[in-house]
Amino acid sequence: MKASKKRQEYVLRLLYFLLIMVIILSSEGYATSFLTFGKEAQNEAEAAEKESIYLSTKARYGLEFIIVGFKDLGSQIQTTPVHPDDSSFLTGQTTTNLDESDWGFGLTAGLVGSIGNDDLRLKIGADIRLNLFRKDDYREGIYDVKQQVSDTRPASSGSFVFTQVIPDYFTYIPFAGVEKVLSESLLLSFEFGLPYMKWEVRSGHDRWGKWQTVQEDSWSGFGRRYTGTIAFKRDGKNVWFISGFYERYRPEFAEGKADATCFGGLIGVRF
Image (cartoon, rainbow, N blue to C red):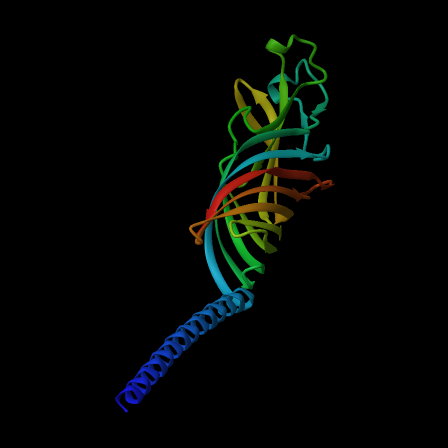
């Protein structure tokens, strides 16, 4: 009888032990399933967030290296008569043929608004550039000089005329573009802009180390700008970028449209 009770106790203890093991194993399974479900839910949430469309606004700053070219100005604004002090031995008038370029730097700052997901975004914004390449001093910047055609004296003592083109201090650049994420830290973008800029032209006598202006004109208007950019994310927030750009303007003066170009590179940061 006692042996029978002991066997029953052993069986009950064994069943109890097995029940506890089943509960433990089941609990671990539930925990594993819960963690797996949580991880999957997190991944799905991150994927959904990545695909979700949202708006953002950022500021950007940069330094541009710029090569500026100007040509096809026409003959009327470039034609200068003999200086009154030389009219006793020189006659006629002289026309320069300005086809020159210069280089310098520009400082840019602007705002960029964008809409899209983390992979592809459309953007619109505006930059302003301080044109450090503006030069209006004697024989600086974009200019051409020529000795009077009726002057047969050596160049060292001759009479000269000049034409000079002067870009404005500021350029205003509204733009629109698209940005594509290539990897977690690399972006590629393209922008099309309508830069607004003023150009001044003056011509006259190059005399005794000074410009003596006879004619002057100016034009303000829009050009076209194309910009390609490679950007690098830093800490998931700041974006450093390197750009190449090309601008073209068709300033209108007395004889029609001249041809002005700006192209170069830009390095900057977007916050």
